[in-house]
Image (tube, rainbow, N blue to C red):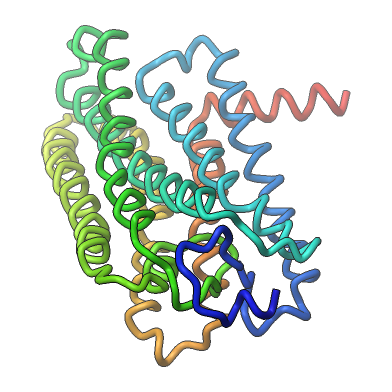
Length: 315
């Protein structure tokens, strides 16, 4: 093992994931909150899916998009946490070449899909508030299906060039990745080739996807706010704000941790590697954990259904 970490080679069959470098002795303790957060995230998102399915009043486009978000969150955290826990618990640091690029692809793909879901949610809120009488005729089941397919295909296609380019290069410097999962720059920086095309493309996606999606979301909410302020009564305005509050909180849960970690990486030379590695894990786990809580707290039908399930089990 030690020889393979330092000897020059071409196209290694495996990469070595270090977990949280510098905190190897504490991996057992670090695994406890990771495992607890993962279990809670799984239970929360499955509960959202169950409640939306069982509650007829939630069979609306907004909650179908919420189910799509829950499924995406489940896939996102599951693509990371099981391997991370195997490193922490069993010191299983090896990941084969193909699996590494598959994991890298899935992580970025699900993040782009999540961003697209929020654009779809913003469009739904725009139609519901600005054209309430036409909401059901505009967002038909056929249109909903097309939107969902478009969001998923966009994620798959935009991220596909990243693993294709990266997997074709020779790797002869090292096979050690200082994270618990295959982080894009940490992987491609090991290549003995000019990896700038992949780096430029990845950076462009990091900038363009949130910028374009943020633009459409901002346009939607500008129109929504104009419609809300034209409502005749304060109660009507507060109710309209309430229907958008969950979406805005969920957007904050996705983009704020991403922005924070991006800033941390830009000043990486001033931040200890264990902190960077730990934050790289945490920021991917925070949104899937918070999204069900946000919608559960702010959506009366979901909140009442959860309370009913809890009280029924206690009885």
